[in-house]
Length: 168
Image 1 (cartoon, helix red, strand yellow):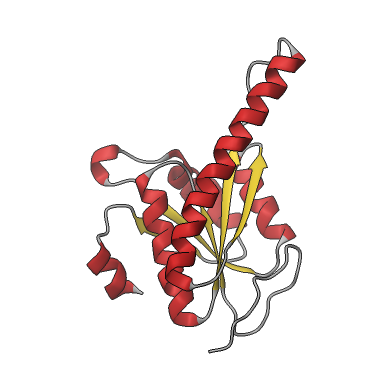
Image 2 (tube, rainbow, N blue to C red):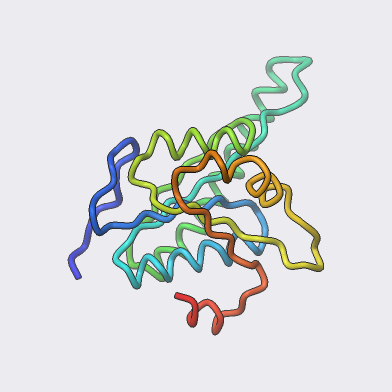
């Protein structure tokens, strides 16, 4: 299999190359979703893109404090993405693209997909039943799914390695 470079943001879909966009948060089920996508990408010659959406800081009384909070949040997001990207690269042998966006999670997911035509699948991790329903999954099911022009893959966050291997 030949090594293909990750698609550049804003580029159109390349026939035969599937890009899995994984929405990640600082939780275990996001890591399971990223591993699922990495295994699928490895087995299909695809690519993994990672997206983390941060909420704008609510404290806006002093601009300097708000900007410091924004900067700290972005740095934490970058560290999270780099940690998961390293795990994805261990599986795929390829670097994944990463993006941090600020705003409402649904709007930012839709905007990111619209700006990156190479994305073929949206992958999200679902919290195990004992942790309750995740706000992203509920929102995706109720609002976003009808607006998506790509398939949505919901990966149960309690899958073990054997189950992931069997599914991919």
